[in-house]
Amino acid sequence: MESFSIGTIDIVIVVVYLLFIIWWGVKNGKSSDAQSYFLAGRSMPWWVVGLSLFAASISSTTLIGQSGDAYDTGLAVFNYNLTGIVVMVFFAVFLLPLYIRSKVFTIPEFLEKRFDKRSRYYFSAICIIGNIFLDAAGALYAAALIIKLVLPEADLQMIIIVFAIIAASYTIPGGLSSAINAELIQAVVLILGSVLLTYFCFQQGGSYFYHLFENDDILVKLIRPLSDNATPWLGLIVGMPILGIYFWANNQTLVQRVLSARTIDEGRRGVIFTGFLTMSTLFIIAIPGLIARDLFPGLDKPDMVYPNMVMQLMPVGLLGIMLAALLSALTSTISAILNSTSTLFTMDFYAKFNKHADTKKLVLVGKIASCVIILLAALWAPQIGKFGSLLKYYQEMLSYISPPIVAAFLLGIFNKRVNGDGAFMGLILGLVVAVLLLFFKNTVFGDLHFLLMVPFLLIFSVIVIYVSSFFYAAPGKDKLTDTTFSLSDLKEEYVTLKTVVWYKNYQVWAGVLLVLSALIWIIFQ
Image: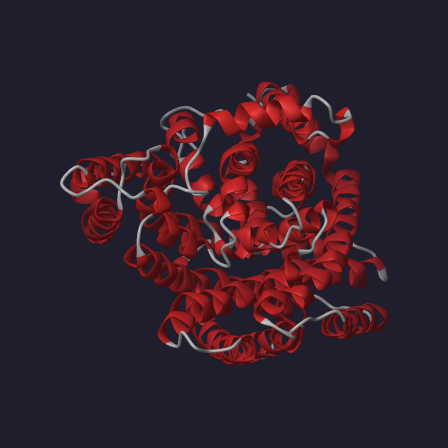
């Protein structure tokens, strides 16, 4: 593995920054009761929700994986973020109000309110396993890759353990408040550092990007042929939105930040704000990754592109700031996953097992669960190197797991006849089919791109849930209150928002977001 030297001033900047983050997180933690520890007292304004959501979403798969994928296949990887922005608008309009009105701590808890406890336990278990072995382990592995560049002789497992301790040191004592307050600093540092890196990247290799764009090269195309190995155009329509709904609307790690909003409107504005910040990743992640093809040709591992840009393009002093920004993304992701996973275990399993536990006991169990979770993730993290690209590791696993869950949520929210028996049957059979595809995918679908497999799993799950529901009684009214979409509520809200000044109307900004997304697709089509 290639290694680089780093100046003393840069090391000092990184160490001081990490110490500051730990101090800031501990200082702003709240753990007096379950609502404070797991949901920050449901008191966060829109800009805090937006920044923390953005920081938590810029995980190893985004920063390391997307820049590596851009290096390998061009800008097509940005489609995941661009489709995600459209999904965010859908989430803000239709799903978010139901989540907040239902007063849930976890997204699986919402499934119990709409269906029954079987769906809750299933989804929570899937989330916990995915959070530990996909998300947390991936973030720890990515952090270790960067440190190995600077200290090639350092042991990979030891680096992973150190980063696990850093994230745990403020997240476990202070809960979601600590995580969110640390993420505010981390988001600002990440954005500023990424802008600096983009500047130096364009300064040294901007002409390469302009040449590709002027010559209509496939590398700068977002819309690709159906035969494209990266993102076939049909996958943008039938595959990515489903994965996006799971990531942005069903993912406890991200949605937990939205649940901390003090009102539905603050939550919505926070999500839309995150959409604008996510749009910037075209310029601070995807395009620099593409330019790196010219600056660092022939790299063996795509996951090493971003660390190479950081270490080779940034001057002394600014290198320390950029490393701090990079580590910001990784520690904030680990922190977010750690808190959300402990929330899932505590509220979905322990609280149901011990119904008489008071809030202090729940907080204590949440802290113990966090210790176990971070230990498991740290032990598994070194294995991720065997899966090739981080992004492909994450996306392929997600393409098997998410469609049955998305089907249950969408049918549950938009169809009042679907019941708990049908939902559980769809979830279980969807999982069985997903597991079978892991082993027999090539036999059934050949070399079909995983994005094009997603709709088959979704349609299968939808049919099973819908048809199975008719063999059982319709759900009672209590299962439909604050858990299903109401057109009359949407119309009433539209009338109310007409009286709100335009710059405080989330629908106006949602419209701007959709228009900008369409323009980017047109420019890079």
